[in-house]
Image (cartoon, rainbow, N blue to C red; front, side, top):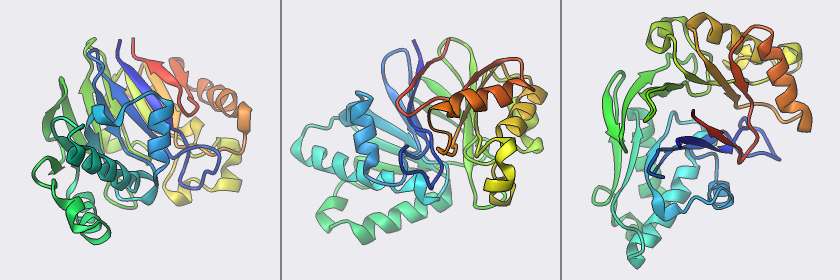
Amino acid sequence: MEKIIVLGTGTASVVENYNTCFALQNNKGNYLLVDAGGGNGILRQLKRANIDLLNIHNMFISHKHIDHLYGVLWIYRFVDIAMRKGTYKGELNIYCHDEVAKILEDQIHTLLRKEQQRFINDRIFINVVKNHEMVKILDYEIEFLDILAKSDKQYGFKTVLNNGKTLAFLGDEPLDERLYNDVENVDYLLHESFCLETESDKFKPREKNHDTAKSASIKAKKIGAKNLILWHTQENLGKDRSKMYIKEAKENFAGNVYVPNDLDIIELK
């Protein structure tokens, strides 16, 4: 069964949780890693999730913010080590838009030793994708989408799962009305929720180009989504976080609402 393996659920400023990122696992047990968090904690999260780094061959990075991008360098570093040892088979393909690609290339050449750059453009590839471009990754036809972010350029994607259901990942800004037609009637909508609507005065999500559980659920209803997955959240509510976000979202959305914790698994039925 296809799954979302949740590696992190938090915003950039979380301490107890990891930054929001996940692995999409297909029916064959292969992975597409989506974002990588802000540091080497990604290695710990992969280990805790029982995902062998040697089995990651495809990554998508949505945008350049540190809490989504810097974990890539640690994955790159350990894949490079494994390639030199002969234990990593095949290639590593990183997909991203042009701004992220330039940053990654600059960081690799600036921060890593020359011998650690041996496999770049040989077995480790940074693939630039464009808005509405279709790319086959694993056995998925991935359509990349510019989410029209108000801060920095940011991409998401839409795909059809092995089971025929549709899934849309929209990065960490609110769904823009201009994308409604692109994700209409999607089965799984993966959407950020910076805080509860009742906490807006405290966290000021809209000033940071983020959304609330209430607002995200209203958008999910408008586009006819069947399942709503909310993450990129605050951690101030502790164990009550999921319950309270679900409660607020269900006031406006009749479908299933998931507010996962780090390392949760969501089965895509």
